[in-house]
Amino acid sequence: MSSRTCAWSAALAVAATLLLCAWLPYRLTDGDSCLYAAMAHDMAHGGGAWLAPQWSFGAGRACFHENPPGAFWLAGLFGALGGNDVAAALLANALALWLLVAATWRLGGAVAAGVLLLHLPVLHYTLRFGLEVPFAACFTGALAAARSGGRGAFLWTGLAAGGALLTRGVFALALAPLLLADAALSEQRRRRLRRAAAALAVAALLALLFDLGHAAATGHGFWSAYLHKQVLPSLEEGGTPHPNRGSTALYYGGRLLVYGLPWLPLALVLLWRQWRQRRRGVQAGPLPRDLALAALWMALLTAGAMVARREGSRYLFAVWPASAWIAALALRPWWERRPARLRQRLAGAVLALVPILVLGKFLVTPRDAWWRSADALRAARPQLASGPIYGPFARHDDRRKQFLRYHAAQWAFPAPAAPPAGAWVLRAPGEPVPPDADVVTTDLFRLVRAP
Image (cartoon, rainbow, N blue to C red; front, side, top):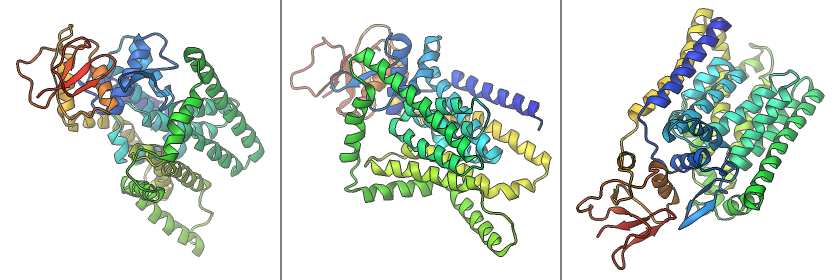
């Protein structure tokens, strides 16, 4: 495949992905996607929420300090340009996914990009809107830019590293030792170390400018609040039933093995065989330094997830580009023995995988109770009324409240004659409720459980 043909194929695949995300009648129903899409909506339509978005927390509004808002900016831009909330969120995620594929391709070739897309967690997040894909794209992009060379490489590396920092906070700190290790292992050690230091300085400058903007909007800096409200509590108590960090390590170690199937075990077996051949002199040359760098990448991010006692497979998402890179290194001898025409066709198939996965995820996603609630809210009449909220609802679940905020700009749909027993019913703030009713109050509405 010539470079021109490859460019056209990539352009067509990107266009097909974006058209699918804009056209598919999808509904965001998981709590995180709704939460982040709601804040992106506020950025597009709420004025000064770009640097300090707010969310429904408890019974009121609060500044969002769980993560920096970098992942929401592109969706907010699409919303400001006229896109509806679902399409804006999915388009932003799709572009981030393509950047991740491009960065992985730059590091490990078409094999690495294809293996990345065939990891189960990557399929799971193709039609979500969260931090995982944008962070992995920035993290992988920083390393790919650092290896690209050229005078402007440090700037692109710094911008990508800054994007990772403004998307996932402390997890982006793993980039510093990774970039420095990559530079130290290179032949042009001094030049690469200076470039890495300059890139990290650019990332730190972006973080400082964001903090100053946040302070101007709210009266307090973001990083201090993020440290005291999110990072330190996670280290001290976490959000998981695990009694100790050993159990957390077992949890993430198990996820690493299971979600890496079949690629990571296959790569380890092939690399072991290649190492034995090198020892016997059958195959000359040492194992590539890329392997050590990819292994360090996985170790740093996995260790970071283990330190905080929190459950969530999404914390490991950014290790899968490294897993794909390791698989590509292991498969390189096999790949190089294939005919050139076959390699070109397989590379084209990798480009087609992204729109195929997006369409496939839409077709297999179950239309659950929250999906039906989203449809009911979106079909609502433009005046406040009452109606049932389907599905489970916990009074402490602020993300479910955000689901309601997100899916209905006007909180309205026809009131049922008799709501189902046990259903949560949406009430206007001033609407009376029965005495001793089970009520969950938010800043925009109240939920009352039907007797």
